[in-house]
Amino acid sequence: MNRQTWAVVARVVALAGAAGVAVGAWLPWLVVRPGYDGRVPAVHLSGMDAGFAGLDWFALLAAAIALLGVLPVELAPVSIPGLGGPRAAVVTTIAGGFVAALTVFSLLSNGFLGVFVPAAGFYLTALGGVHLSVGGALRLYAIGG
Image (cartoon, rainbow, N blue to C red; front, side):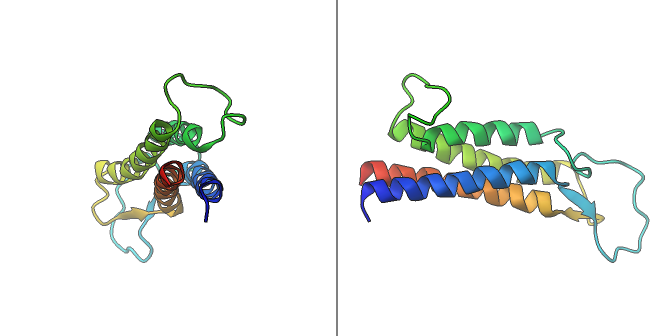
């Protein structure tokens, strides 16, 4: 495959990752473990409801920044001086890693201790972050050859 094809693949993977982050940030990140018979603490943890709250905004912001690194210059809504080519691809890769790490940090900071388990939003957001990182790496490969 030539560089142009790799650039298109990078865009598709990154767009799929951004869509995953957007949908996953909206969905709940924690639910009560199925089959749990014990007493559920009467607390409401961040990430138990659908909607954007808490760390979801950081994930969405990182996904938006990541998209700037893989979109062609003609389609990018803003132009960031000094951020072009390999630097933009590295920013995309780092932003995707940040999203994936943010989901793990959110899970560990809630201290769910066996009562709660990750829900679909957690997995979709983490997978979207991985896709963003892979899209940035593919873009870097497309630039470098």
